[in-house]
Length: 100
Image 1 (cartoon, rainbow, N blue to C red):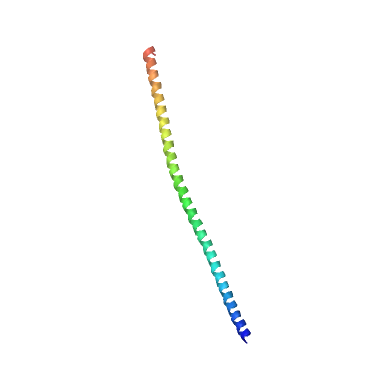
Image 2 (image 1 turned 30 degrees about the horizontal axis):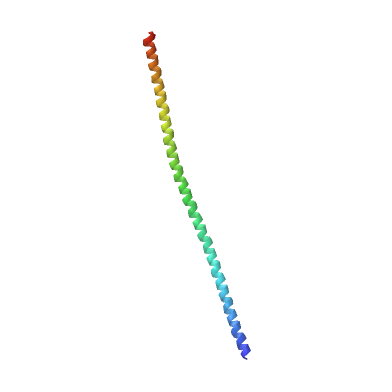
């Protein structure tokens, strides 16, 4: 009789341990699922931040590039203007010197 009671108690303990194992496995799976979800969110936000950074960098680069291009065009125009002025001065000097 004591053996039957002991086996029954042992079986009850085994059943409870099995229940605990099942619950722990469920919790573990839930944690894994949650971690996957969090990693997905982190990746999404990292990508958004990276995209915004790239957009801002591209805008800044474009602005700087435009300023450089504008400055180069201005310098080219000034050089052309100076060249024209010098040619006119040389032409006037020739006319005055040689009476042409």
